[in-house]
Length: 125
Image 1 (cartoon, rainbow, N blue to C red):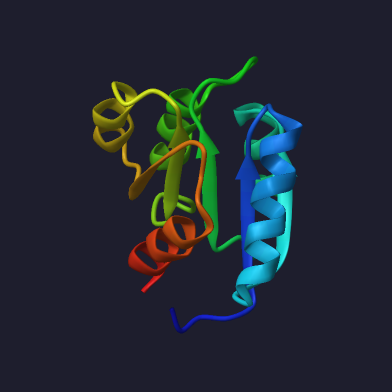
Image 2 (image 1 turned 120 degrees about the vertical axis):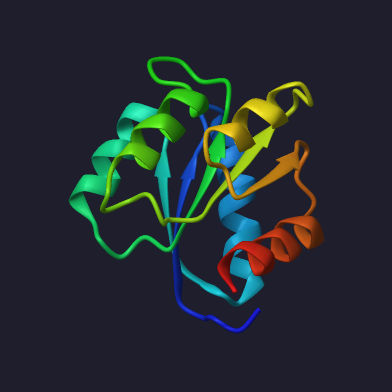
């Protein structure tokens, strides 16, 4: 992966998952900042407030606004629709739905560091 100093929006209602993602991303050497959101609604707020986000890591099953709903909102927004989104889930059946609504990639939980970095490289380059 070539791009350094990435700003990543990590969206997950599980605080342990968020902390693990943040730790992996920081250790990668490619990420300068990880913005955390606990559901799709909070994440949309972050996207509206900031224009420097390079990548979204998105859980599917969350309260208030889930990942599929958030995907629909982001892909319908002309300013955001090109933003790479990697979906994270434990449910293999959600993969097709996520890709259908515009996800750029898919990772099964638990996320492994090398898989995360490899997937980021494919969607960002």
